[in-house]
Image (cartoon, rainbow, N blue to C red; front, side):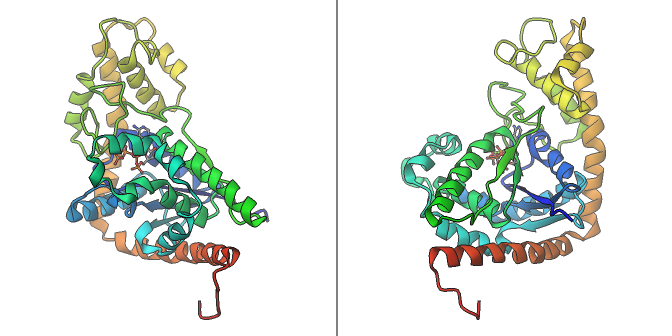
Length: 335
Ligand code: AQP
């Protein structure tokens, strides 16, 4: 029987998840669990790259596990685990920091965006080296595909450069070349209050949170920033607000943006259009919130994480051993 390809992705527990995280990543994960051997983790070590309250981090971590299951991940099919439970991530990170360069890391958009808002003296090394740990995450599982939103594709590209460099250096296929996969519609959901900016959990203005009360979600969509026109048209440059709402509507309806545009042809009232978008979001998020609550109440989170850590560690440790041998670290029987 042909071996299944592998898929791997994760989400940082740095805040309440947004509709952007849902459309760009979370909802996509389920699509991989039947045809791929799928590994989906909670990137809790990555969450430490910016200051975070410990209790907030711990609660967000449990939330994400419940969100994964609510989004349709089946722990029997998808290995769900915590990054910090598999020590191989940190160990491979320690090796890989020597194979990515300061110049390329300093050119990463996420680093530039996040560090720009900070005092230079207080930028942690972890924020700078974020893509190295992310490369370790991907490479430990020999992932063929990495489902992510658009903002993370640059890091996957850097990981590809690293694979090329590493395999060339040692003249063998140590690492599998991964490929980023972004959703066809909704790879970059924008803020409702400033549709030229990405909807982001660390910059919550204009966010829809997955835990928002449904009435609040409706209110937020009804007051989303649009433009002074009256045409429902996809034109991100001149009509970023309407284009963002069309994208949300299309993604959740599983149709293309062009099909969504057609549905609203002739509609000249933004209020009517916004109501349709709000209905669509609520239709999806309402039942999702219900499932999330049931999972949290079921008390099964720890069990899922323990089993996930066991399965993930087995695969990750095999890769780590191979890498250690390749670079010349002495791997002996006790290990
Ligand atoms: N606005 C978005 N539209 C589509 N996809 C998005 N993602 C994030 N925002 C959007 C995707 O969600 C996944 C999880 O992201 P992450 O938590 O690992 O980090 P991130 O990319 O930095 O996401 P955030 O929400 O912006 O987090 P903060 O603000 O904490 O840095 C990724 O696949 C991401 O592409």
